[in-house]
Amino acid sequence: MKLSIVVPCYNESENIPLILSRFNDVIIRDDVEVVIVNNGSTDNSDDIFKKLIPKYAFARLVKVEENIGYGFGIVSGLKQAGGEYIGWTHADMQTDPKDVIKALEIIENQNEDQVYIKGNRIGRPFFDQFFTSGMSVFETLYMGKKLWDINAQPNIFHRSFFEQWENAPNDFALDLYALYYAKKLNFKIIRFNVLFPERIHGSSSWNTGLKSKWKFIKRTFDFSLKLKKSLK
Image (cartoon, rainbow, N blue to C red; front, side):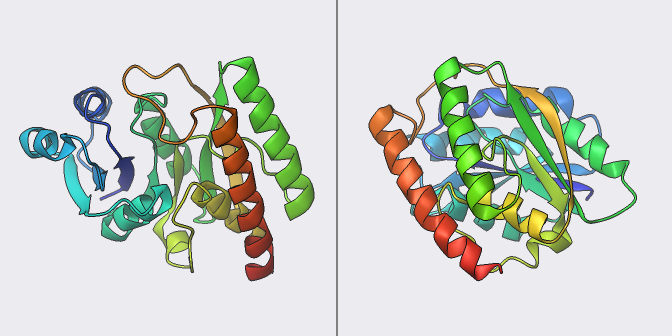
């Protein structure tokens, strides 16, 4: 297997058929697998997975009984991944599965393993861009590494990088952890533009307004303190 891409799903029942169908449209090779993680969903996702996953040869399911967090779901999927390259993207259809294939093509053209491929979101609402820019400036100044658009998708890297991880966060700080760690190890970071449209179905599990953004800032700040100390 060349690539295993993890897709964490928490109460994404309306998007599951769409994302599987879209991956089916763009995967034209037999060495790519999509590891769908049912990350403790409380809607009818389980029934939809049981019905649809067997129809797609590239897809397999990892079930997390209790939703501990976004990061925990991704790491649970990465542990089951069999690809030479591994990574993750979102299930909300705001990141196009074709970007995963583009990221794979980019990393395959490199002649080294210490490469980290990551999307760079364009076409976002002004307020979201402003929020992301503020967080990026803070993280860059505080962590001492250029950290921009940290939560952009997809993320693709050689599996040997994942094997070095210790105490990865269970929440949305996983994106920061992975990017910062890659930079600390002097990986070659390659960013490429990805469109980021509005959700088709459902709503974000965290981005629900100013209050949720403030909580996100506080959690990220607290984690940044721990991360900077742990990866010196």
